[in-house]
Length: 117
Image 1 (cartoon, helix red, strand yellow):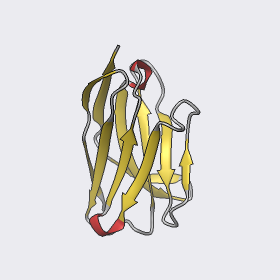
Image 2: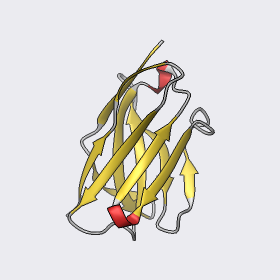
Image 3: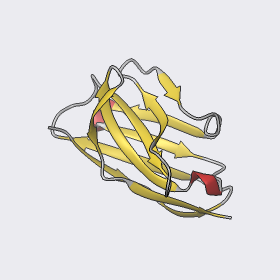
Image 4: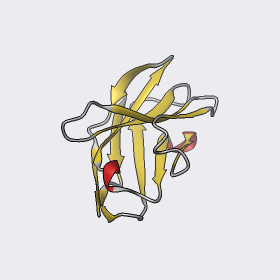
């Protein structure tokens, strides 16, 4: 079993930055993909970014490309999401996940990101 705990969310003004962290415990996750999804009020959960065990990275919506950067530290069993130039439409609960082959097995409890205009 893997437990995921996100941190780093909060309230920020438009144009600001936040860095989300997600620490995994229970077993090493270096063989798994780690990723981030987000869910805004009244909307479906949206894929944000994923980093595979190989280091290959995929970003979701075009709106985050060039502004968000995903990275991982396998020694710390942690994945990060650096978010720059934040916009009010980035407001959502951000969820960390771990999986393989496009299937995500474990999810964190989520961290709220609120961007004020």
